[in-house]
Image (cartoon, rainbow, N blue to C red):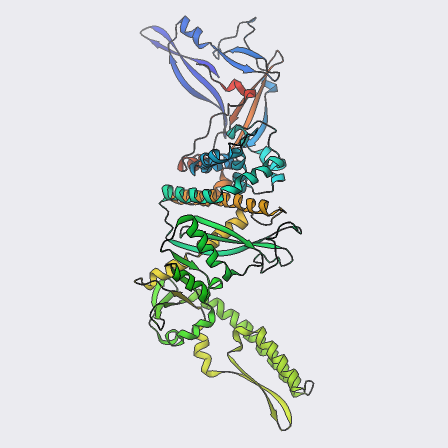
Length: 591
């Protein structure tokens, strides 16, 4: 930073004007940035602008350094003047600033800093627990890892210590683990807080709730966690113990709540528990529940009706038999490109089927059916040859083999007639494709059936509500991929639940960023936005002086045009320098 003179000749007299200038780094190299115009300065004004700035050297000693204009040599014997050794100027302590700055902005936009400060900072600590909670959630958004990985690899590479004002060397895995224990008791209050905040920021409504389940497996035996059980693994890890995670979101993907269950809990047994939990937290209301066919049972639907709720659910494929006539002959309504549907009243008058048919799904199922039909027919021909040549004579064995084939190819076995008969004292196998079922076989390809007790809605509205289940799937993809909720490494039940809570916080930041990007029409996904800001860094500029001292300036790199445009869309301001740390007190500007 220095004073620059500007000369101008006017009315035969030379005038000198002064400005305060700072050198900054840009993608095109060092550039000089004008901070302010000072106008003409008389001797006293010039002396005032040659005021000193306070700096500390590495030993913590205070010195007074004066500012001089670019074309004025400093006094030769002034102890307050620092002369920089240009060839020894260096850059130290580079830190990734962009993703951390974005994550912290989202954290504060959701007012999670205020939420946790009021609840966990009452417990004394060297570092406030609320700030460590922010570190855990931002890590889950930016580069999810274990507590040990946060301490050793991720946190030291970020500028979070400057942004959160955390002393260097105070973040370790023990402190991170202890923070998990402080967060878990506030799960219910956190869910209510986030629900209210989504409503304020995005006018989010929670009258239609989408419900689904997934699983997450644990590495290790976890003998002290009774929740870890073997069950149906959606992660394709049947060799590992797991827990079940139930998530409730609205049609825009904003989470209302979540719950954890034992790893061997059947999906259909969770619905009533979740509904009671939602009523306890948010009160009883006539909500619309949407869930997939794996959770549907008559008992669950009856439980929804008892609570005055409404539902729109998938049904098992076998239920298509109930609407065979409508599937073959009924009037179809186009609800979307390549999708058509129709309403089919259920006898009794309280429910309605929504029969849907998709061209893309039809092509997929047709290819699957052909593949399995070909395999089944090849196996039947082989079995018939074994019977005809006498290699397999026992009728009971033939029927057992035939039963195994029907079980293995259950999706297409009903299209065939298969029988074992006695002919002229010999056992024969007969099979053929049933001609009467050709039309039914072709009509059911790509068809699926929904069931609802909603009234007064068109087939387009019902189909649109159900298809929003993709928002739950998007939430699970984010939790498992971007936020890496799996695998679990904690061996205690409370720590596993706290890990899921941190993932829930990470998802809250992720879905907020997703909707902010959509609102500003950036065309970016959350992952793309984080990647775009990854190169925005902070660093220390170290200026060695001729008298053995060092001036340390902590500065932020100049963002690219794309980065600045994104930050402007998100209304995030980059600090020009990070000045809280006493080590870099040279950042305090002269006044």
